[in-house]
Length: 117
Image (spheres, rainbow, N blue to C red):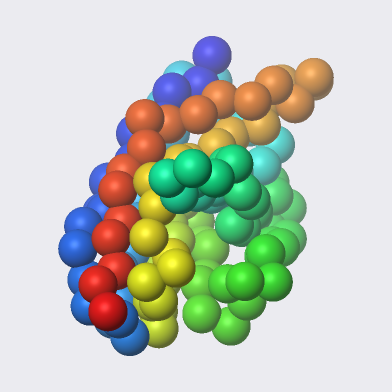
């Protein structure tokens, strides 16, 4: 099993920056990829960014050039650096891990990001 704990959300003004962290524990060796999703009120959860075990990254078009996903293997932690934030980035952000031979989904508890105009 894999457990995820997010931190780093908060309130920021439009144009500002935040960095989210996601610490993983448990069967770390079996994690194939980690990523971030978000869910705004009344909307479906949407993909934001992913980083694979090999280090490849991919981003949603809505955040390309503004958000950067990275990882610290020594700390078993994945980060999401968010720059040039916009009010439409306001959402609950969830860390996600795909682990094991079946790429099972594991989710963190979520962290609120609010961007004021």
